[in-house]
Length: 219
Image 1 (cartoon, one colour):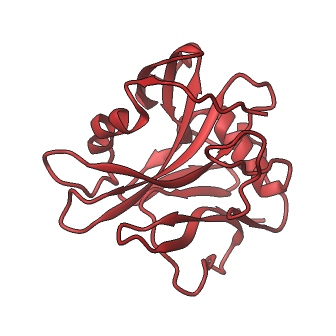
Image 2 (image 1 turned 90 degrees about the horizontal axis):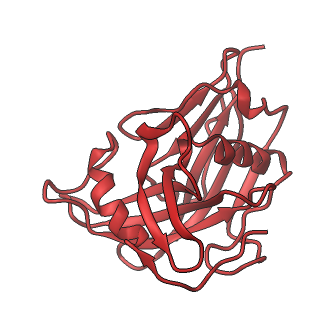
């Protein structure tokens, strides 16, 4: 179980994201940089208790139209070998000391626990309270889920991040979130499941949508 420490972070998560978001192909904000505001999210626990994992939802009103991003982050006590391209930055944690912060889509621990969430072996946790399940996260899943080791490194595009197996199974994370007025729907063809949740939209209303989709490979 991850313990949520009420402490000071330098720089803050939002300060790290302000510098990092414009480097992403899915960034829709202004040329002068984003203005990220926390809009929700959830956590996953590392069974080994070493890696912090958080799926942060942020709103950004800096562009021509407001955008909402899903940003999975991992927090580590030492650099992750071979993941320099995924480093968001470092921060000083008032309790844990220096933490290396990574784009979680490229961290094998987060990918493994997200797949465990699809399978029902992991439970989404409240973003701000220790040992409290997040009841707004819903999961739908059918069929087998390949092990995390079968997925190649994540590839970013203009709307999300995809990880795929040699057999064609695709795990897609939606980085630019879209509200689903009538409830989130998973594409029917080949869909094996989805993870959906809620966030505070830029206009102050409560929105729901799909965070991640698992697309079945060819049999």
